[in-house]
Image (cartoon, rainbow, N blue to C red; front, top):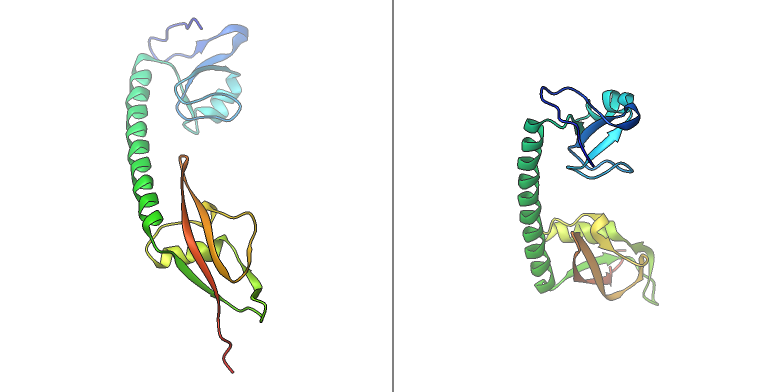
Length: 170
């Protein structure tokens, strides 16, 4: 795409009277961070620029965007390294035990879902959110289960979850 130069931060017009902007964040159905896109003037003026999603493609703004992208990439790499370390710790971890009421046939009166597994892991010091727990369905019986965890960025691990019946107090 051939781009008109903006010397003093003036709006750069593309074909059909649209405005060219550099995206500072990913925008759904428009483009990714760092791309030069053409948008309607009202969309740029009323939505993209005020929210910090786009900026005028001046030399200064393009340099700032490149520095920002480097910082974001470094933060992403650090986050991935932290998640890999967490995944290794969890895979070596013996597992958690969740107590629940069950009948004589070992069927639970309720079920064990992602929230209970997340709470059990947090109690052991692992910062796992319920949306990281991958279950095909809620656990409805006692036993030992291998539960997959999706930590993000394609990093997965498995934790052992023992569901035991709690003795009812009379």
